[in-house]
Length: 137
Image (cartoon, rainbow, N blue to C red; front, side):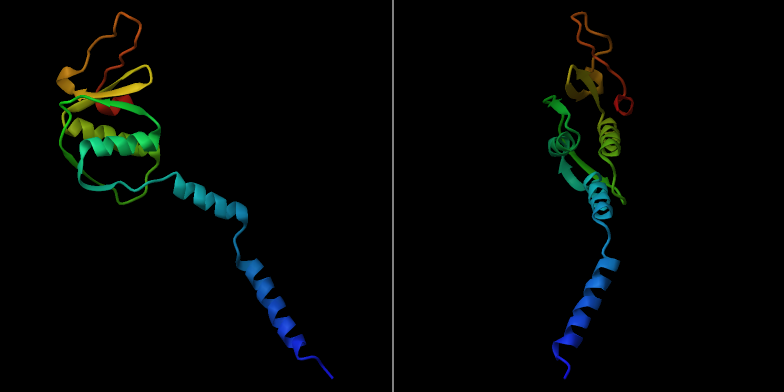
């Protein structure tokens, strides 16, 4: 007499083999997750500029100081996910559209109106690398 559990065991074995065959490898899953984690969506409608600066700061790890004259709202639509480096390039383009630029002092990026940006290197050793916003990537 055959056991009733034999066909059940065969079904379980077939399901297990099929599951292993169609399950992507752990390494492949990690690659997909890493790629997803290293890209972001830039879809903002009427976002306050300081909030956008904070988002970019958290994304890139850069420190920003915002001049009190930096105000307004921004709208950015990106149909594809972008890397943090590309997001920073978009950020610089947004600043330039708003009449703003950036310059770095040590490890701090300052955001100021273009007319207020320094045009020379300081004499005290701090390199004020002033350029148009899209050049400061």
